[in-house]
Image 1 (cartoon, one colour):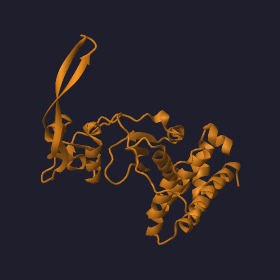
Image 2 (cartoon, helix red, strand yellow):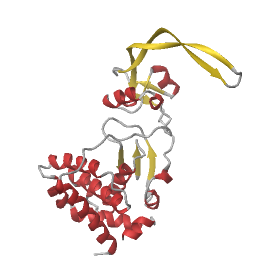
Image 3 (cartoon, rainbow, N blue to C red):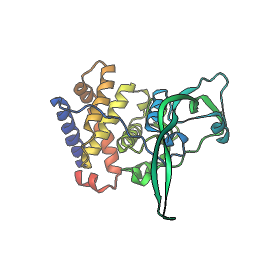
Length: 278
């Protein structure tokens, strides 16, 4: 076994040990990235963004906004709804000092007395000109240099209500709707599996997902970032249940492949932390 694979094995065993102890916190919600994405929904309130995500999209707009983007709503598509505030005068005044003029202005305070529904349409229910989302700060992603070396393009996309990223082996691209480093390493691990296993496409979905997630968890651990373990545990448990296996048994079942995936990444990396771990 190579030294890098030994380091990967140590990291995986440490994580499995944490899983077995059963003291892992529940997964917390992903934090989707705020602009750079040039999507109107990213300027919405957190409540409305959550409503859009719950209705299966990360990019929803009105008719005119889609028209400006060169797209149109498909015939028969149904709108989803976000909430707009209903405001009325509160009969209270706020004094606002203007530093430029040195004057104090009196502004009447408006209060929210309720909400009204605003219809918008999901990007998935439109067609027309391809959307170009502004790029992610790829340099901020750990091990992004490996993707470039493997000829894989990293692109930004909108959350589609199901997943925050995906790897396409056919297109050689990783598409992310989050700047969460865990998500990127998960997709990079998928790419690594496809590199080492020509039959990866035929592997069961639960195997590929657990391999990618456990590999990402180990890579983060090797770089001294252990705060994600609860998230990994919840994700792996969900896929292990699909295979009617316990979390630990599912991890052990794919362990050999997982270590090969990690080894492929470590050997391609110029990252100091991974080199030290190896």
